[in-house]
Image (cartoon, rainbow, N blue to C red; front, side):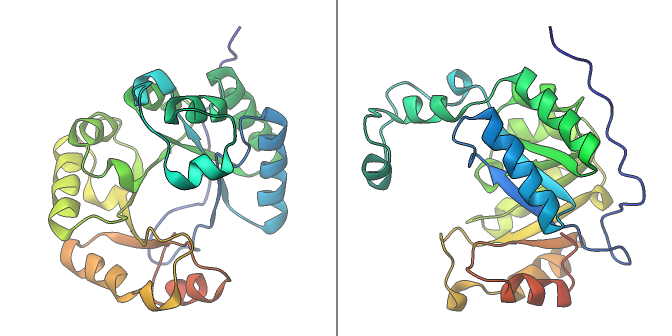
Length: 238
């Protein structure tokens, strides 16, 4: 039986100028499909002082074909797995497990959030969180943006490898769907893992702010803390 989740109360947290910078700890899929490991990641994020711990939620059968091939690095690191579908399915947590993770976060005083990778999971997360993080891989998925924009909640949109035209199109779709621009925070993001210092280009974050009049933030893949600190000094709100 699935428990009825409580609506999250953000209290004094307001994303934007004049408010403390939100720090999101990316748990992602680093639990490797283990609920107990996901609990441990929440504890680690809490002890590190993060405001939010964020996971990823999906149903593999709605996300990809069973014929999707593995990348070369995945072949090396995931011995015995024969397809992208099989790899992703092994990392999938169930909806009831996410409800329990959210309730655990409530008891610990850290905000739960998860990125939905398809619409059914977005509908499920609608009852669990008041902020939706949209990954850079979905910034050109306009039907998905239209669906999430209809929730009229705060949105954190990561840009990844997108162009300025793609960012503008995404913002327009979210607004047309019912989400005001003042509810949207756009993250500058470099998709190198890890990102080299010479590729960070924090000025792009300011260019996004100036071009679209949105709140800005930074999604970090560098080693160390210097770049996130610099991003906050430049005005990152997340």
